[in-house]
Length: 349
Image (tube, rainbow, N blue to C red; front, top):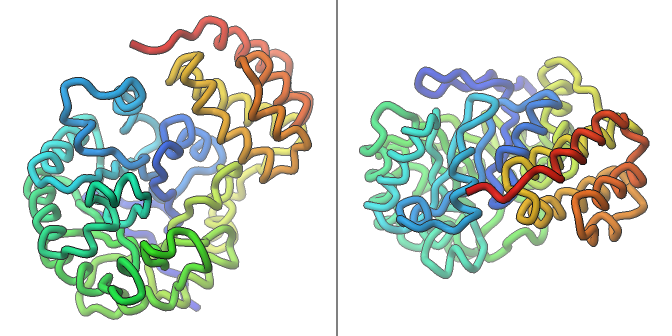
């Protein structure tokens, strides 16, 4: 099969068509920096931002910290926003545009109950008229930026309306579509149905299309592109514990430079550096909690024998010791620097 060429959105030419998926609580600045250090991605999408948190005068501590770093780091950066009120969504789009977002993505695919219970995320696929009102509000709020949309195949097997939402969204000005090959009812069970995405790919005059779901390596990326007819793939859970995974796929399919996949001491250093970024952004106490899931994923993806120890580490100092024990004898100067930063870092104001 002929592989698709890179996509251009507005004035932004994206890189190889392997994109980092938005993942709430995961694709924050430290994670995007880790991906960038290991070869990058054609597009990096921030974690989902709730519009209600962005427009409230008193956001939570974590939301406020994340907001400071939504658009920092490797460009191009797309910021994904979620909500169900047109006014709040439009204002959030203006806020993130002012912070430096190059692309604004609308979330209509998150299956989490705390999101759909508030009639946001994938729940919007049950009311396309309301969904289109949000699209129109966001497009009008940021006329100089491309607006993109992420969705699922539909709410459930009886509501497979991704083609209709895609058609109407494109008519309202959406410049790129991403479809996860599952319904909301499936959450993350079973296998992504890439072939079902082809109904969107076959729409006449559609904007660029991205296939999402179960893309974990070059073979699955090639299969997803072939079966879906999409122009790019998006990698989510496949990058957890392996931020070099996107660059590996791009190298194997598009011939971009091969990333150096760290092993042994280099792996310990990579994990320690990601850990240091987390502490620097969130502070010592909050950072310790935020980092645990990443340490667990690194352990799973790379065969570290002490996953439980990494998850239970009560302080940054014990976590760093566990990193050295589990992944390799990292350069002592780097670990000492991370250790010093851990001792000095306070929770950001």
